[in-house]
Figure 1 (cartoon, rainbow, N blue to C red):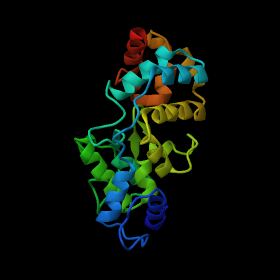
Figure 2: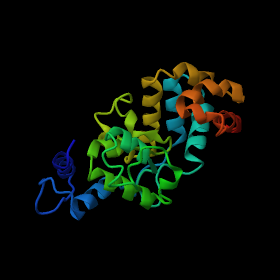
Figure 3: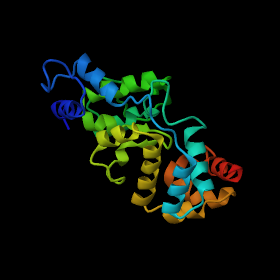
Figure 4: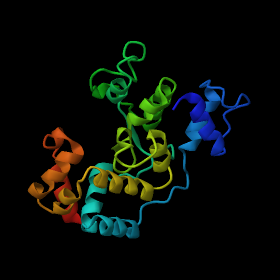
Length: 234
């Protein structure tokens, strides 16, 4: 997707990209329209019924879904102080998906290696990084952020069954239930149902799932221990 296509999508959604319309110029007005499209000050919070429905669909206990929610969100909601989905923009992912073209010219948003120091300190900072990246490559930018309660990386848009990374980001801005649906899509798309169902209030039982979900660093970050404790807490 290029800037013109993004502008057209924003216009179709009812957002004003300025008098020039879809001219492909990523100016302040288009950037503001994009910000508005991801802002939802009335986004519904996740409910007990949502947890129960997700558990039924995945064939696990609601305590497991609640536990994953608690661990991945850090106890915070799926929307930040800017009323947009909580995100973490990953400069190394953007770099990888753009062939490292912007590493030299835009080191704050494109890095050949993972670098914690590049993470924006606030949600406003992180969205600033995302919107700056959109100016360079729309698809790679949205693929380089993780979204919502479950911090699912936009790079997973295809395996999760979304049309593209932008559509995934837009969906995450609708409600926390939509973010939970993203988890369901991720689990199904990556064939993790068996590992999810095995999760219980013991760290060993959680290892197969967190190893797949959180990656090789799961042990160093104690994700299996955190999830087991969260499940035990109900």
